[in-house]
Length: 358
Image (cartoon, rainbow, N blue to C red; front, side, top):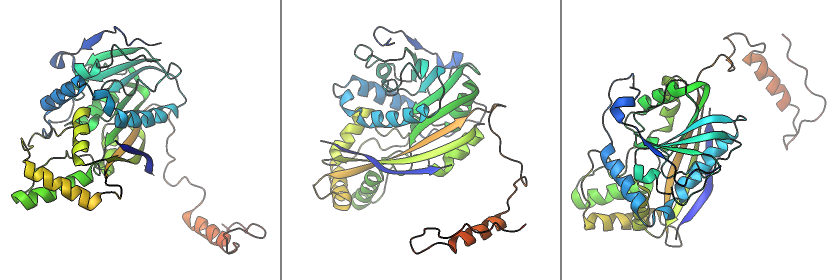
């Protein structure tokens, strides 16, 4: 049994066509829009990741572990709802089985394009799900986008980008595909995700084998996200962070759920196997360091939400430097004057203070 703590912490920085719908397969080399930046190091094995997603989609219990991706998709759609606009075409980048499609409606958009590298995952719910919005399924790699320049109104991506080797290149391609004043909204796992599992694994390997291997994938640091969006040419950037804690009976149930989600380790330099001795030691360390009073263990998922807009002349622009009418010195003087009129409870008493003289 899992316990999902939905509201843990937040920081702010800055018609149904599912049944019988057609799936389009995009040949990578033929229609891909190339990235304009040099090739990056292949941290993740994308072939392995596709295989993991295919296997996950084929599992009988695959839908039982949708809880985390559904929760993040719901929160991401809430951010899309904050934009008081109806979109024509929206691309769901790395859509999986359709977590975003569950939460959007016909008042938000005309069509949703579900784009994922795993055809099996993309079609997992093809015969059972019904959506309010018409969907089109397209098979393709998130690292190579086939969409024409200035062709889509919005791109949304939920818990997929953390497996992309070339995030800057993907963001550049997404920005190019958007129409002017189009919006890119995404959620990906941040660097603090599964820190409990990472620590337990490292301690167990040091103790039993005298060294460590990467068993939890490296994640993007929140401090880098705004810079990545800016580098890709986005404006009006906003970044939010959530931490979602999920309780599990033990480390083994956590790892089983990650496998069923298609979120197993896909680092190119990963160790091919873990010994039973290391696993048992890691489970004991996990429970000993982080265990709850009821015997369960927590798993923390840090989720970074980002919003960026493709530039357009209609967008608000910052004022030119030096165009302000009130100096910081005058503001400081005014604040001190207000503080001097407060009582012990912080309530302003008496007449308002005189404004500072210029």
